[in-house]
Length: 440
Image 1 (tube, one colour):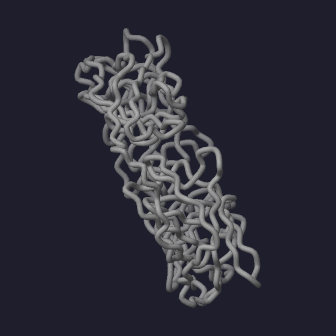
Image 2 (cartoon, one colour):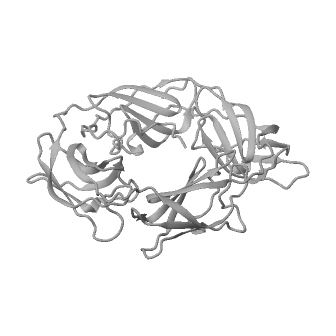
């Protein structure tokens, strides 16, 4: 679900030319301005479709997606019908989603009550820490519309390690309660076995992550056995179960791709070393080489280790243990593991070759100026530090929460629970909301 702090936009994963490793200076007793939001969220609507009940709130900001009410805070009533429990609560933007123990039937009338806990932080609240009020017997609009039609399998296609089932249905499939990997069986006569490792549901598609890539021209079939009990089945949002099937033909869209990715360039800036490959498809971002498969050499300087490997599109980004200095010459070697699937490969499962002492271009550009604190602002539970610098801040290697101390004389203590870096800002997630007018 969306993170209220968008760390992806300018992160190290996608912008390898950033993060030159210059440390920001310490500071003490920095004044923090207060935005002063003291208005709690107000319930605007409650709707249900099958097993999903959605509460929409109006508020100046979004709801707190981390600290929210437990399932036990809600009671759903439906006179004369089987009991309905709230199994799970999750929050996104200004909506609270309740997943129910059974689907609400078409035409069924239900009401909902919410009791705000009197202690603790597990309540419906906005990002500023303002608590939403309790409510009793709130009418819930039923949008199921009498949907009793099960999803129907429309197509099955495989490319490399991903087998995608597409269904037709009036609603999207249930992405929370779905079939386990063990409910599927992939057959391919005369070739190595294929297992289903993971099941991912989105919209009207079910994607099966396979244990090995299906080769170009390889013929496979798929069977799905719907469990006779329980709720872990392929189903739509209204709770209608899709049928089992046996030996379903699967289209192989790999189109005979047997060409491995080829290394095009290697460049480093600070702590990020980026390998760019050419290939007909993107690289496999799930099954990729471990950090231990790479060796960085720099004669006469401190050792450089590879701490982490991140794959996106056609690039492999190596997160290094230290920044490469301006003008420093480094080379890189990659040893493809002889067995296993943790290798650099494309979506079709073609492995990239090993290489030794590959020259790496150094694009650090001589930036030796540290970031300078420009402003500090707090709103509820989020305290945002904004820095000025020639580049963005390092979003991976940053200060721990324990490096910060928030003071507010005469009020309850405030701890820093988490630190999130994006662009040129450092956002501190606080243990409690800062009240309107409170000086910190």
